[in-house]
Length: 226
Image 1 (cartoon, rainbow, N blue to C red):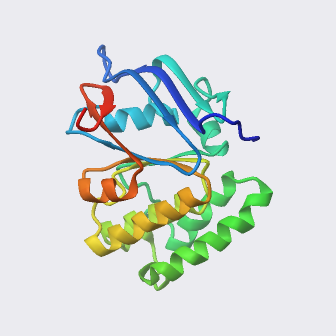
Image 2: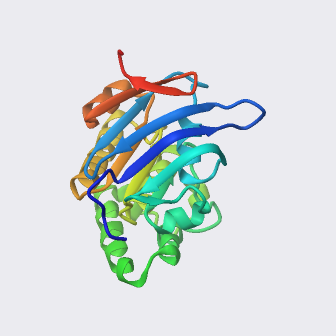
């Protein structure tokens, strides 16, 4: 996809919900290449639902989602992911019966041929950074601790070098030191030109990583403190 001169991700007037009522209410959001934007807010404020709607896993009732100037709001979640709009969900989505190695390699199935080698290089770097995974490559993911499964899920998504990463509570279940290391990995991804939208309960971590901090309240976004 050819990058436009505008924002990498543009969300305009987005409404979405699970039942009869909207939990995402008219959200506008633009994120530029290389930018990390944090979204804070209480439970039930709509943060996770916003990410799901942008990723295509929660159907939008109104509004638009654009990736590099291209409308993607009518595309299925899988198609959005193939274009580089990827979600790191709050719930760890690993394949418990597959080994750690097989979990990491699974993303190659959705990548264009030219990106597979890059994913392998990134995977090797992730395993070097977190040797606890490297030591258990041939073990089922079900045997990992919650924090290790989170590391596996993060590493798998980052290996695809997404154009936009929607990260929902990536520090959940991680020790402070490991959470900081994962935060550094997000900054490195942004440094390569990706856009990152970060939903976090760890306010200190979110503020340390982000150029902009927004707050979600009652399904709407506003400047933190505004």
